[in-house]
Amino acid sequence: MKRVVIAGGTGFIGSALVDGFLETGYKVQILTRRHATSGNSNASVDRIIWDGQSRGGWIESINGADIIVNVSGKNLVKGIWTKSYKKKLYDSRVKLTELLVRTIGTLKNPPKLFIQASAIGYYGDCGDIMLNESSPPGKGFLAKLTEDWENSLRDFCSQNTRFIITRFGIVLGNSGGVIPDLKRFFKLFLGIQPGRKRAWFSWIHIDDLVRGMMFLAENPTCQGIYNFTAPEPIQKEVFYRILAQRLSRPLWFAMPDSIISMIAGDMGKETLLFSQRVVPQKLMDEGFIFRYKTISEALDVLI
Image 1 (cartoon, rainbow, N blue to C red):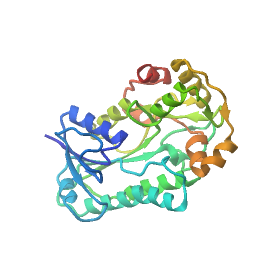
Image 2: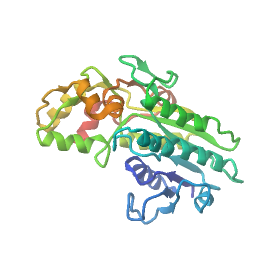
Image 3: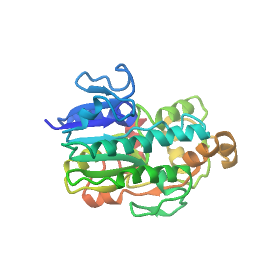
Image 4: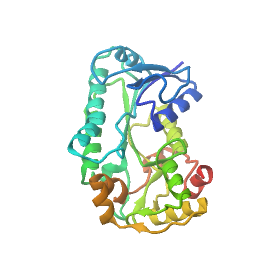
């Protein structure tokens, strides 16, 4: 039986990946800082507590694993981006990835595949420009964070380990991410659109994210950087209008950029206002078939 180790396997994306690997027949182990009652509670999953330090039993779990997937990282939108919060965001991504890379370099039997999460925040604010995996990094805190995050793996050298970087768009699902919060606001007749109407919204359904990860894991020629977004990004104005129609609730107005920036600072500016029109060119070139290509198809099963 193949074995996968997932760092960050108790969050929204990590829990979905745990289920996906289990259904595919893998033995799953989770590296987590949480107690056993948190996150995915499947009894067949081994939980290994780690503290982000280069010691402990978690190192033994990586040795001889077929795959390691790193989706760990402090939530970007659970706090205002003060200097100390930015450091926590940075350390939970870049420092932990550097630790994993250093550790793998010391193993006698390193994993055959290392999949590292990243984000389309790498591209910064790009207006209407169509972005693919070869597009350059943008400007801003998120762009710098994700660039450093990826660079911490690009220096990774192992003849025995294939590596993949996955740049996630906005992940849509009913067990986490933005959809539960948006449903709650709209059902309370508080539906508004944050910021510019014509800004682009690049998204992916959680099922396609998991299926895409399985696809890359099972195809040994796949390596390098992959955008994990649906083939058809949508402008925010259209997304919020369709969402309001599906929920049978009004969409009142678009909140001005200046108010969002005043209330939420850089966090609001970079997570709510930036326009990123991203396509998954490499996934499509590799032959991956998306189940949810359009936002209407995704909302059909989410609303």
